[in-house]
Length: 121
Image 1 (tube, rainbow, N blue to C red):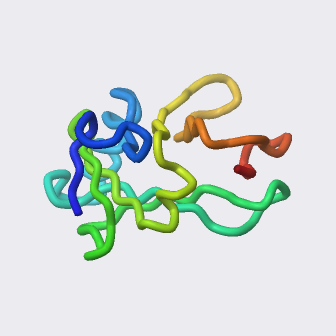
Image 2: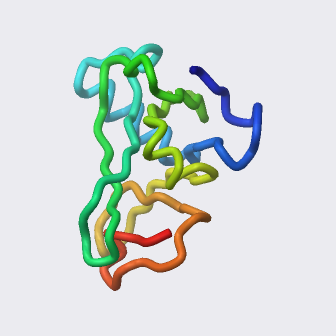
Image 3: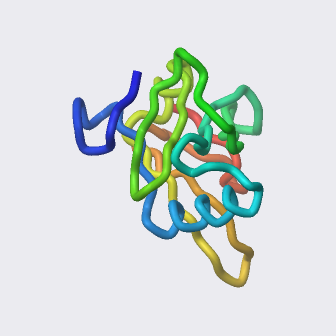
């Protein structure tokens, strides 16, 4: 199922900020991936001191059961199980003295661990 950010129910949409989308496009280009077909998979897995953690990886194409969100020129692939945890989230890219990286701004999080790497809903 394909969904474009801004359509459908707002609580199940996953978006990316412009800086996150720009960084993802640059990384995909560096890997020789076609940004029109490829995307960034956002998933949730068991682990971390709070119980759940995020995972991300680039993929050339979505899986048949994925939800596909288009935001600021990139495609985000989210499986249905992960969508239960990340619906309504925004992928951001932050840089600074502590290092640069992607960060999930998730409205469903009740608590995060001290390092910010895992969460609980």
